[in-house]
Amino acid sequence: MLETYASAIGSYAIAAALPAGLLVLYAIFRWRYLRLVKRTIYGDTDGLADHDDELGGVQRNLAPLELRWHERRGPASPTSPALVDALRRTRSMRTALLVAGALYLLTSLIVIWHGRAAGGDSQRASFAVAFSATLQPFVLILVFARLRWTVWLALLAAWTMVEFLLFAGALRLTPRIAALAIVKGFDTVSLGMVCLALLVLRPIRPLLIGFAPLIAVLLLFAVGLNLLMLALDIQLTGAITIRAVAGGTVAAALGIAAAVVAIRKNRQRAITALFVAAAFCGAAAIWLDVGMALALPLGVALHGLLTLMLWVLLTSLRHFKSAGHLPDEILHALVCWFVLTGLMAPFAAIGGGFSWWSLLPFVVYCATLITMLTRQRMAWSARTPKRLLLLRTFNQPAARGQLLNVLDDSWRRAGRIDLVVGTDLAIRTLGPLVLEDFLLGRVHRQFIKNASEAHQRLAELPNRLALDGRYPLNELHCLPSVWRLVVTDLSAAADVVMMDLRGFRASNRGAIFELSLIVSRVPLSRIVLLVDATTDEQLLADVVQRAWSQLRSGSPNADLVQPAIAVVRYSKRRTLAAMLDALFTAATATAEGPAMGREMRSGG
Image (cartoon, rainbow, N blue to C red):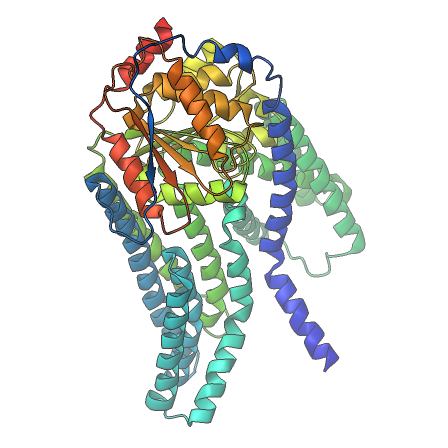
């Protein structure tokens, strides 16, 4: 009995090995990257008081500034036409994911049914195995559809009921045998479910999609090595010894280390030529049967070339992703469905062997999803995108991440988001270029160091509609000496500025500066403030009124008759509609546009 349990635990541990390894890598990467960001951005801030004096002068005869509170208590339909259109676009993308997943499920059902029947099973038994196996794609469809947990339970109960009726009706099993068959089916797919449950976790998405080419490289390496061995008629029978394993380990370590050093020193061409020469010498030694010791250069070269190939694919994927052709959520879905295809391949095996037909569901999924998303992007690409500047206090990372999730499915359908990287969202906004520089030990290149570099980087920020129908989320790494300039320029060009002041306290000196800045230089109708129970509302009112009392005559808000700032008191879903309505309404405000903000910045 103990051996049975130990064997089962070992099987589940193996199934969870890949995603668990990614979680460990994610934890290490997160710790090192956040430490670097924190150490860099929290530099000297003594100059904040001096910069406060630059924000305003003395402007008399101003109308009283009102904080206009939005405290909608119950769920409500969105009133902004732009918001309605953005939510419709999100539903269109979810529909594409659902349709592609449904076709994957149907195709896999047919392929497994056919494969089992061709292997000698009866038609009824083949269909029973196929239907039980489709629980995995069914659950994955529910994951990427982002349904509520109550809908999850209802759909899973419906799936189980259909399976029971199928077994008891079409297959003519007794109710007891049908129930046991369902339990057995759950047990059969449980290993795959453990692997998928960890892979779909959002925290590991940056690393999962960042290292997705690793899967392709390993597959190409395995296939190429097998073809080479077949061509040279090389047999491994009796060749696996302790000496061979030790030699292979040393060769792998030397090859990978040499390639990594060359990549970091930007000497890929020279090391590639050396690896090719070493591989030729090692292959010649094996061919001439000179001695296996001389084949060590071949192992070093192969592992070095494999590492270089992986790096080329990583950089190529980075350029492809930066162009918006493969967004994070879509790539994450493709990786999960690809892994699922490998997990389901044994169910479609004919006579215990591999069947190429098991890849057909993944091909159908990719073709369907990319076709539908491409057509949607072509229909939406004619519109001019808006620009949102997201300011915030660098705390409560979970709350900030939830806010970005909401904006992903609403605002990013209408325009892009610009933000300054902080410790709260550094991992959430991690881009492929930043990941590449981190691996190279050159993250310092991402930080804006002076005014000329700031103007150049801001001018080059992407504005392109991605395959999933979203506009970019642009992260800007700033040194302490330049972040005020960056925020000033971004606020001048933004169509709307949202400032998340949850957790706002007197110690948040940077947020105080930013709040004073936008009151002085951004049209009030384009500002939305977000607060909650953790906000020091008295401090908020004091900072706003102080900035208002020192408003300069050149400010776009100087001549307002009824000045007011929208303030949304956030309380999860109850005020979600109010927040989004205020945001989209501010983006379409008829007040003076960003040009006045630019003039104020350059002239003031």
